[in-house]
Length: 72
Length: 167
Image 1 (cartoon, chains in turn brown, blue):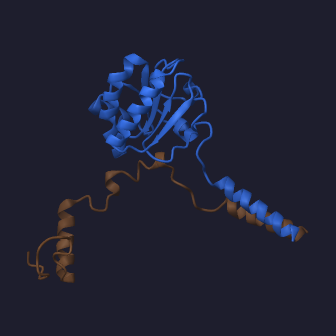
Image 2 (cartoon, chains in turn purple, red):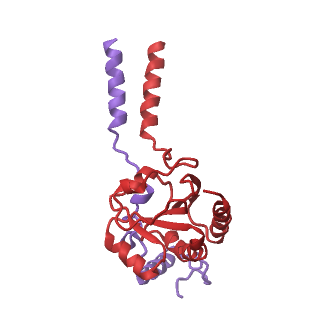
C-alpha cells in the first residue's frame, strides 16, 4: 500500500513539475517582434536564395523564370 | 484493480487541472464582472445600460491594427444610440500603447491592462478577441479574431439586435 501511494505521489509530482509551459495568446509580444523574423534583412534573403538556387541548380523554383543555371 | 482505477483518476485529474480552458466568468451568458477590479490604466467610460464591446488587442498584433479603423467607424455610427467600445491593450509597456493610439487615434476608450489581469481572467484564445455585452451587462457574443468584412457585418447585425433590446 505504501508503495502504491509513493507511486501516486511520484506521478502527481512529475505531472505538476513538468518543464513545459504554455505561452498564452496575450504573451506573444516578444515572439511577434520584428527581431524574431529570420528573414528581416531583405537584401540578405535575396542573396541567400540566389546562392542556394545556384548551388542546388534550382533557379525558378520560387516561380522565377530560368533554366537552373543560376546566372540570373 | 481498484488501485489502478484510483491511479487513473488521479492522473486524469492532474492532467485536466493543467489544461487551460476558456474562462466561465467571461463566457456567453455570463454577467460581466466589474472592470474596476482589474487595475486597468485609463478612464473607463460609463457603461450602465449600454451595449459594450470589450476588445482585447496588442500593438504587436496585426489583425488588431486592421480592426481599429472599422471599429472606429462602427463606434461613430452607433455611439449616440448607447454603444461603447472599451479597447483593452495587453501590451507590456505603456509606451507601445501610446505610440499605437497616437498613430491610429481611435475615438473610443482605450485602457491598458499592464498586469494582464483582465486578459488572464478572460483567458482569450486568440488575439484579438472581443466580447459584446448587452444593456443588462450580460456577455452575448464573443468574436474570436478579426476577419475583415465578415467580422464587420457580423458585428453590425449583432449590434443592431442588442441596441433594439430594452434595458
